[in-house]
Length: 93
Image (cartoon, rainbow, N blue to C red; front, top):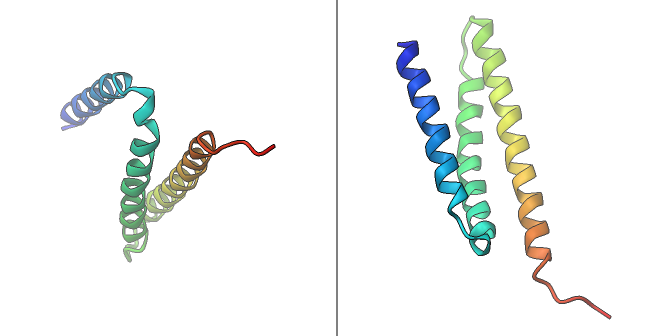
């Protein structure tokens, strides 16, 4: 089972690198906004996983870590998107 999961992880890393490296720079801002929406869905899933009433402490720890990482991803993504959009504004003065 672990071999299959490792294979899927390596395949996803390779595929993600290939897809991202071929994206032109003019599409980075729209893609960042789209990935922020997906990260928001991930945050909801992490909240649902953290909220499961289970006596197993590892479930609580992993759910809490998932919420923290997803929240950092969403907030950081919006800061990056805002900065990218700020580069397109006209300068005053």
